[in-house]
Length: 76
Image (cartoon, rainbow, N blue to C red):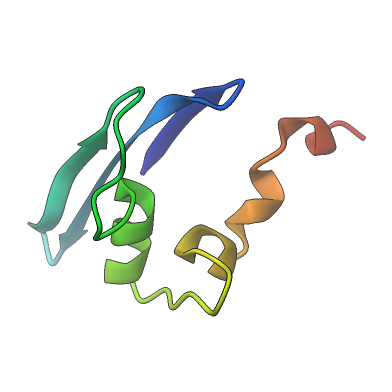
């Protein structure tokens, strides 16, 4: 999985392998592209890996990666 954003603009890529075989992707959502109904590349990959999102969250948040959404919080 890869996400590259700056100022809310960017893109995502994801792929999932299982047992040495590509089972999802490669998926890509480019700058300005709307995500399909199935979700963003990151959400779809995380779902394939077993992430389950609750009400009001996405798979990214469900597995705790949302703590890294704001890079400013990384500086201590």
